[in-house]
Structure formats: structure tokens, C-alpha cells
Image (cartoon, rainbow, N blue to C red; front, side):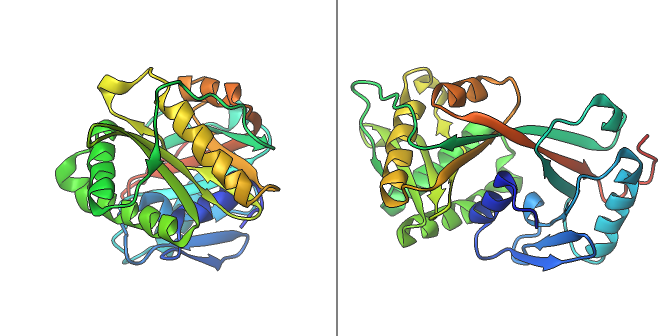
Length: 265
């Protein structure tokens, strides 16, 4: 597996249920307990693949997971530079996901909003509220994704209780209305996806939660670098840059249905 920041810190987010096996020039990522965890069951090439090789990589992914009930064929990689249009597949059955990798070296620019109080998530009610809020605000089908969201939130809670993650919430009365945090290690800090209830957006909740969580992570690990992955040009990316993050590369993914058979270019 490559040593680039998003790829390394993805391992912090996936947690101990995920295993990494070396292949011939690539890493096999597997999460046997959750085959519906898309990016927990994928291939990571050691080098950025060429457009001509995309079809072969998806076939390799299908062969690797033959007989395993995964939901998507996924090949993911990271580079220090953006690929040009010549290496993007034609629109069709294959999705081509592009994210910008942002890295913060040193302490963040603190953007705390007056009147916003936060505290760590701790009780069963806190974590149940976080699971419910994420499902609603992410807009996924509850019937199909409820079990997955609960499982993933359980991983984050376990990491928090071990001291490997810091997760803070903002509350309106007893109701959780926003949460954000990070996984933390001696070398790396990786932001979690921030979630804010729609009626409470644009009130400075995320910037305050982020500043508090990452500030605590830096107190524990002062030499760590903080990593986040965001859609290029998006409002979240602009906020991250305000907080002191700088571009460090790109992360790409091919996503295809298990039945993909058409050529990609």
C-alpha cells in the first residue's frame, strides 16, 4: 500500500476489521464482516493505472472477489498530481471519482464561534443520535443502509473510547445537532465526515467542533499532520483552506457494477 497521506489515513478510518494483503503490484483491501463497506473491499494499485489498463483492473477486482458478496467493483489510488482528461473514462456504467487531498502541517487556524459549546460524545444516547443524524443528513436509504451506518458508527465509538479518535458534538438542549472529529495517531490525524442538522448550518458549528477536536489531537500528537479528502472546488474544501489546509494531491476511484462488461474507452 502506498505511503501517500489519504491512503495511509484511510487505514485509520477503516479500523481493525479491515485487512490488507499484498498482490502483484497492488494491495487487496478486505472487510469480511461487512461486504457492503464499499471502500473496505477494493484494490489499491501501487502506481497510478493508465486509461488503457482500467478495464483490466476492474476484471482483476472481480476475479479477486469472485464468490464474495461485495456490492461494487472498486479500484482506488492516490497521486501527487491531478490526472488530465485523457485518462478519464468515458461516461457510462463506470463511475470515476476525483477527490482532492488536503494536508495541514502544524496547528490549525482556530475558527471558534462565540456561543457554540461542544463536548465529547460519550453516552449510548449520544452515539445513537450521531448515527441517526448521519443517516438523515447523508440522504441514504435507511432500510438498506441502517445496519451499515450503525456498524460504522460503532467503529468510531470504539476508537474514541480507546483514545484513537476524538469526536465532539454540539447540542440544542438534549438533541445532538452536529458532530465532527478526527482519528489521531503519532504521525497522522484524519478528519471524520462532519455532520450538521440542516436547520443548524451556517452557524459556525463545524469550524468550532473541528478546531476543538484537532486542537486536542495536536496536544496529544504535536508532530502529526492532519489529512482530509474533499471534492475539488466545493464549499467544504474552501473552508478547509481557510483553516490552514493546503493541497497535497488527489485520490481517484473507479466504481463499477459487478456485471460490468463494456469497454471503458
